[in-house]
Length: 316
Image 1 (tube, rainbow, N blue to C red):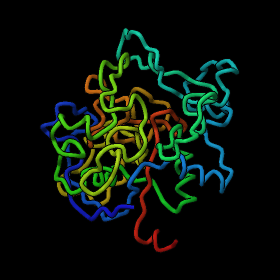
Image 2: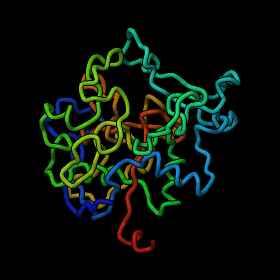
Image 3: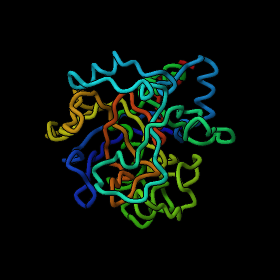
């Protein structure tokens, strides 16, 4: 694990960031105590060790419980066909030929029965020979179960940004402020999203950990590759509601989830973007970028990394 020293820094979008979203503003000073963080996203090998030791079954491997699911949906939502309630997860549709509306993400996402961390593209796929790839199709419950087993926890959003900044000072990207360094610094989409990925960086989809340069303190893939879960609740208005008269000490996020685009479900913050990020769509390879994800969601571009305090490591 990598030590991230205590520091005060500007969390949120920088004024020079042309891709910044309203939910990333205003930037505000925070002070985050030192902590340890994984150098890489949790890999297939690491997650398999956890599953082998505990016989854990991930959310994507379980049949959907309609009685539980409907509690999170508008009243009188009709029950979908039983085929939809089979174990599975979301995967990126690699055969998109045209897009009518970029706000309709259903055009490039597909629910795939049998997709899970062992079979990331569906039942005919495998992670054999991919020990050093980040584990995907991980829901919040799965990440927390791994953390409990490993005596770790998920980072707060502020901790994640502190680690992503490294020794830099208030930069837009993990490597600095130059967009031109993106292709050599992160696994993202090159080409026309979501129709054509030119794969100029050598990877069309997910890549092994440590395939790109680390940031200034030795963290790999904090930008791109797969989204990373944090422990913070996602609230689009959170930054606007803060008292910014002085630095906020060790913030752990909003006390409520709020996303007007998904008002019925609790969402958590995920950070870092993924191999699907492109400047024309989400540009979430920026440090301040923040996206919401429901606790039971999993997909082929979502993973996590863990953190620990010195006290937690002393317990081992």
